[in-house]
Image 1: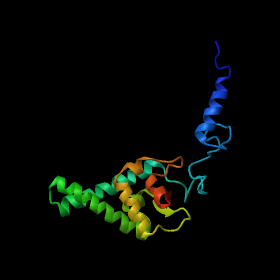
Image 2: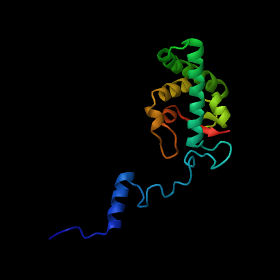
Image 3: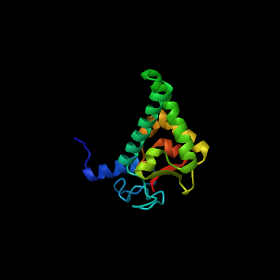
Image 4: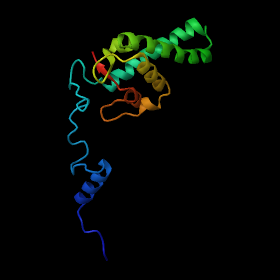
Length: 163
């Protein structure tokens, strides 16, 4: 019977090289990863480092709750279905206006976060509008890279960092 005579390690190395792409080193995937934001040139800790997933989710919940409250109480006047639709509009406007001018929404400010371009400057209104639109359709925000940046951030060249 002719079977494979190589070791399990050889198989893992072969698959690792195949998964990592041509010219990839024969090391374990992400062996030189370091920390979130290292590839982007961001510090490991403190101001300017990648914001944690937990802080970002809490900031999003605060912002969404604020927008839902405004749309339910001031715009829809108690009609829940209408309020949910208006909450998306209010969230879009809140995000574009606040992130586009001061770099953070109220929820992000409370959590000590801000949105910046990869070079550290403030994101443009166009970048913020596209980022917010992609955030509202949810799927890009749920797909992250190894630096925990969502596709909505990657698409516009931004990153959410700690203040």
